Image (cartoon, rainbow, N blue to C red):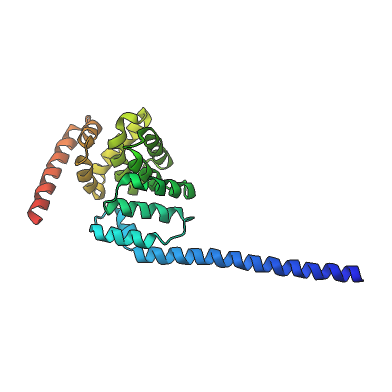
Length: 228
């Protein structure tokens, strides 16, 4: 009886310890998600505008980055958004490489994370950057929201990309024109070194579209200059 009683006593104690530890884990898990939710809410509309390609004043990105900095380090999506906000605020891309590395290590399926890692590391380590961009292209070749970002990264890495990756980039460059909502990304692309060459190559068999594209760019540029 004493042995049985002793066993029951220790089982109750072990059960109590288990419940205590379990509640602690749930608390920290819940608090982490609560903190991430607060950080995301405070950073709005920066994450949404970055995904949609809508330009905001640099100060908005700095404020968004401050808010996102308080997110959990285990939240890969938040880390990636934090790094992108710093990029758009004008900070040195090379200084964000570790941020994006950390982000994709926590969220390896993030197309945007891999593309941003490629963009930020292109100057210092183009071979690594081209591998990161190839991963972004492999995960979702026709991902609507990240087409402009991936093509932009490709302008810095073109000579380091394999032929398959180049063909995907050329196909996505054509999508920037074919999908009217993405056309503003062409202006950003054409402003980059190598951007015009990629556009010309992408439309070498669509001469009429290239003419229409050039007219649209010229007209849009004139309109924007008169509005300033």
